[in-house]
Length: 132
Length: 296
Image 1 (cartoon, each protein chain N blue to C red):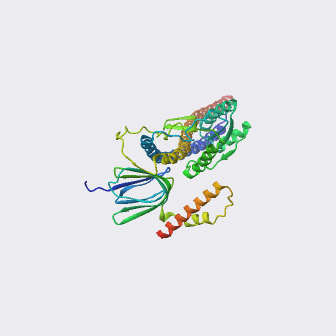
Image 2: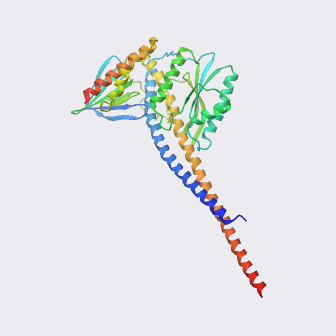
Image 3: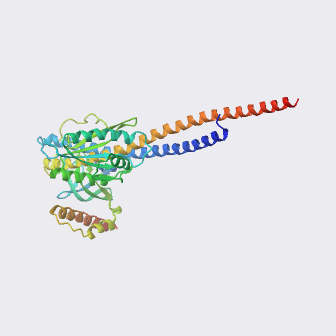
């Protein structure tokens, strides 16, 4: 097959974040990372929260995505997510505030959502520290 | 004949009003463009989600989800009314409330316990005047609603719906059809009528009809379960966006009309003023002539 490259499209409900060519894309799936090279088999999957890496040439772009879906079809990677932040723009203070907040959650659901929020915050902090 | 001084004063006042309405028209136009851009960008997401859902349903035939089931008996429902925070936008708020009130009355007559939720000061003031208690009121949705704000509401509705606290969610808002047409509607968002959120524009005739063999991570049914709540959220968000765009259009139209009316009024006042002035001059001349004739 002829030499081809991927196209990576990232959209959130608020705006189209990104639409550009890429050589290699790493997606944060719900159960771990998934690398996508050109000419991959079509795929629909669920994303977890984590880091989205888009490599083009020698440059790699890093984004933090907060769940959502991915569709890969004919060398187009479409990422649908509720939030996509360039990791340089992550506000560590905000994430730390989430961690520091001592919510008195007593219900199981409350505890669960709190734990999730804290995990998200930890991932954000980790990514942000990597960027700086 | 009114005195010229009064007329001049009135004309001045109207000129000032015209300046203000004209500025407001320009502001509304600028804001409309921004709101429109946001709506268009959101549309990309909606379209993609619809595409995804369509692809999924192709492989997972049977879908049962609590969000899709229509409940036989509706006991509790939520009516969310989206109005503007500010006035001076013509019939915008009035027409939404006119649409929402009969719906509310009808639901109550059917024995449904309706929880009223309001967004926008205008709606709050109206319902307060009508003596209808509302459970939640929001004033932070301006012309730039963020997804996070809408998400907060959507998550709560979903929780309540799944817990069985509510059986229906309706939203009364101004639906944006195109730049020249908006209609007030009451839409039922939950239970979801169809799987995918409908995109505003017609999809360009299905590019490739032949089904593509997808790999699913995790299973298609599990992904669908996640897509449904998302689909609801995006629909609610779209309501807010539509409302924002429609509000700016309504304001622009209202202010344009006001500016034009002010212009007409200035014209008629100028005419009156000139007549009054001329009459006064004529009167003075005839007085002088009369005086001179008396001296002879």
